Length: 292
Length: 276
Image 1: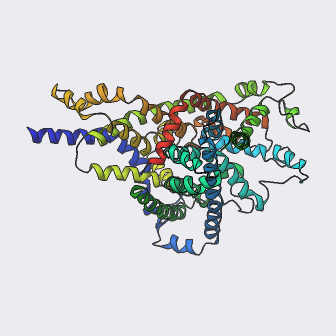
Image 2: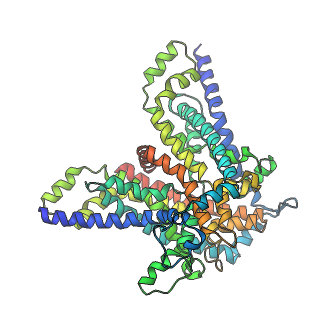
Image 3: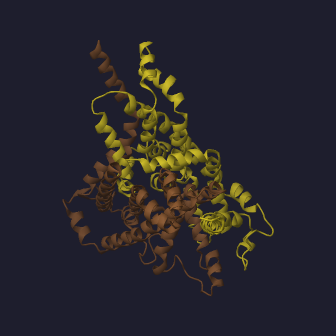
């Protein structure tokens, strides 16, 4: 009797999970395995795939575009991650003061987060427009000549970074605010009684006690930054002169412009490995969190 | 801290909050302002922040002269089906992982959670090829699948269902209730707060999705709002009034949802930070 109920529970569990597992197999597990298979093929979709062993990997290591896109992706991460984490930390600390109207500010900071990447990209394309953009109008007041934000290789990447910081920082702010609210108010109160300055409180209390959350946020930001794509598609399409060709864009253009399906899969796998390494770092950091 | 420094500190904090607030909201207000201008006043110099002669001609144009309503219908259809499937089966999966015993449970759960680490550009090519083989390109099924399951949502549901006492389930079992009856009659009605969080994330994920409809449904009869909007801005002769109007209208649903369910948004994101 007991055995049959056990068996029934096993059977029911699998049945209940089946609709979810089917979707995961079609959209995640299957594709990951398939991309490993594809990375060993030369395949343009029009002709049958040809097995070329490690050909794609060898090609990759000698491909200047790949190294260039890796460099651009890391440049993007190196600016985006600290900038967005600091802005979010700063916002969260400000929002944590018991002031009237902070709920309103929190809502304001959060509006960009719910904006889709496409809407974000088109709004900013208009704001950054070289002839009629409102930003060039504003900087005109400072005596600065109009800048071709997206049309110039030196400013295109930084423009994309700012746009993504705009969209994302409110998300991290809310996570950090959640972390801040776990710090007991008494600690602050006693620090104030002891005569500590706001700066001292920030450096001696807030940052050390919040460091696990800060780590989670910065590593999440790193992982997001490695896959940036949507805003680039709409705002610059990888240009000008490939200055915004990140790994994400390189994969897309290799696959859907040049029909190099096998080669694009190989780049994808490398991106997966890079992200995996960062995720391992994340797990390490979270272990610190548990000890704490 | 005497009251005087307290007051000036407060003032500084408000100034800083205000600056970040303007940075956040200004582009959205500028979008709204542009959408209410005619073709002439968009390019006027100096720019009008509040349109002197607001017009809804862009809105009329969008509904009458473009496929906007078709895109809206597609987005709505895809989102509704994907969310329904996702919420129902993810809470069922959450229930299984929280309350049922079976061989391989932990392994499967870790495997599912592990998918949150997959960067989506990795999936572009294999998903496209697999969906081509299965004849899912240019079908609604193909457009729905990416939003139909999500590890984060399963995680949220499981965490929530773990807090439901086992006694409730045991008592129902005594009365001879089957697993599915327990789920439908006891678990699901108790899950409303978690379902609200899950619904928000499922909605944003599918409604805002760009890359999947882009590669999975290149036929214009399957265009979603995001694809249509991207198409508008790709024309050589961009009409910024129309583009901004499309942006306003596609932003409206999540704005309303956000204003109604703000509390759940915040709880949901705080959970993200606790993940792992």
